[in-house]
Length: 496
Image 1 (tube, one colour):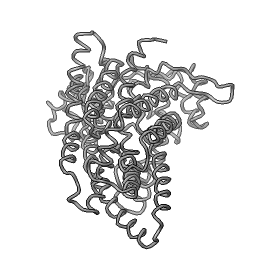
Image 2: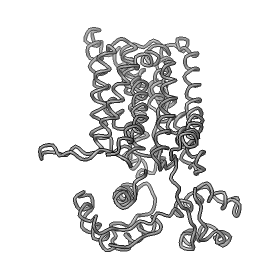
Image 3: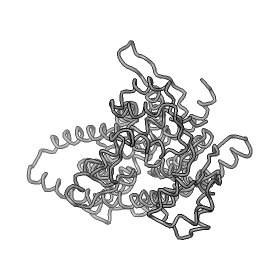
Image 4: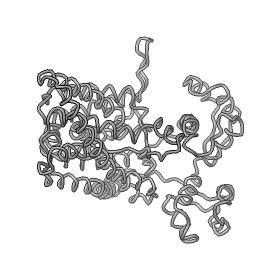
């Protein structure tokens, strides 16, 4: 095992600490701020269940952020994580709730700019839109939910002592769920960039179960988050829970529930499928900031009670921190990458090859006039940015989505289907007989482009054939893409 990998992992642990110090406020900030739950109790609950969530469900987290930029070197991964962690830590010291996702987004864009890699601004704009929609939606949900709860309490006339006990229990249950989700959904931000160079091996536990290397990696990240909770989360909790507007215990509970509802709306593929099947508009499935959502919820409570009680100065500081986070993170990452590469001589980007060919361009013959682009055939480009610049010089008004797809398809990977790995693939037990048989038919074949392998698998078995890209077909296509990811991971060389 290369011990230097643990040095690189230190930036992920730093990011985990920053996340724990800041994002814990999203789970228990309103409960601690309203003095319904002691900070120590909240910290213990968060620490336990954030680790449980990371180890058990961390591997299932969505990796939408990876579409912004494919960090392909350990040095680049180290600095991307470190830059995001440094910015989050700085704002945490100031007592401001910030989004780790925002910081990571900024750092990835900084890496893209430094390495001349293309940023998918379509994805970026969608994510940024949720930074506005999330707090607004949570505020609206909180506003009407709090009004409804107030009426219910007046009608039921529950004794104050009983109401206090029930509210404490509800806050603890909501906090447990939130802590588990925090570990399951955010551990990918903390350790996701290091999965390709995971130093841990699977451990067999008395023949009963297997503690996988990935679970060990996520356990390490979960512990870092827990340390951050205990060491520095209280200040941010008090900012969220009491500095914006004083909260009652019931108000604190409503904020936690409303935040959970908002996160569910942006994360549920089942809800998206149901809305689509009814012919209704769907909600984009993108990562949203729980920090922003919970602040919107607190503001919603303030609007119900009395808008004059809201401390708009504190909100202004928080919003300014939100604006700064991705910008500062991108700048910090860019500058630190320069020093890491040019002063310390570390590799922050592994050169890749992009090469157009008649086969690549033929895939887009029905969408644009490909003839002008044939002058680029068989020319090699070391970055996606170089290829994009060359295509822009020939067809300046090409649709951005089409251009990105051409660039992705032009990436040369040279994937060889190695028969010696068939046994390992079978042990994974993720492919059915037809899917596995289609893979075995390709034994020994090498594919210049990734899409070539996808195409060959589809020709060998209908189980590998993707359907039209509609919401109704998403569950089927999602299963195929998940299986394709297994194949690519098995036959693609890991980053160094």
